[in-house]
Image (cartoon, rainbow, N blue to C red; front, side):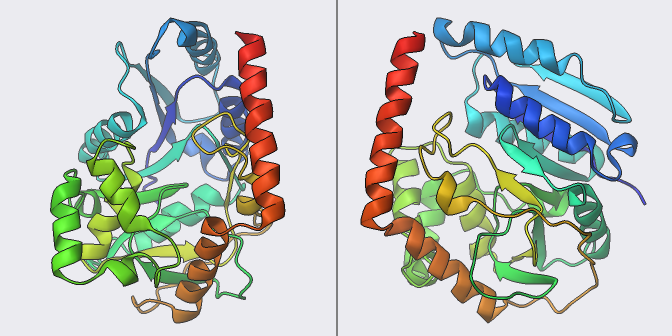
Length: 307
């Protein structure tokens, strides 16, 4: 099997980066895979030491066929770092597997991603493969499709990434003109359209909302596993998402996910399960709201104390 290179995007979180790499090293195919790391530069003086600590660790990484580290000399920010990095590497290799520094993988993650990339290589209706599965209540098949694209442990081909539209204004215009907003929002379970508007207005820098919208508007699909192969460990207050770890926590798959070619069409049970999850995420319980507020306060106190 011609294995896809793994791209890892890092910044200043040493503990998360170590956990991400150590889990990846335990993957089937890790020793046969090329690992390419994009290390973003510090945004300010306060981040210099943390970035240096991460980079020192990155230089010790082994267990892959090759390890290449690209140290940015100026701060790109997560969105630009990912967009530029994926564009560069997918052009060289034709396909990529993408991780950020807070994604812990099952030992079977690389096996699944590479098998899916091979199986759907020529299918123009498939834009990507995803490793994380939301903690949904419904029982789902071994693999299934949902329209759009996702961002927590994913893979694509050069042909898929070619559909990425960087300009949020173009995407929003097409969503509104096509009357797609409700469906784009998972039947109004979550305000993804508002997230896109915020990106346009500079209130967030989300590359992921543009990736999702690009795929959605092209009527293209992402393949998901029936059990999660990725655990997001960044909801602990160290990154953008503060205190959401209890809502996004999943059990990692303990066995390989079998990849067989299936019809490329949206799985309605999965779509409805995703909508229900997004609704819970957007309308959390009072208990969760209080817990999240306390978590945020403690995080801010910790950051103040360490400063």
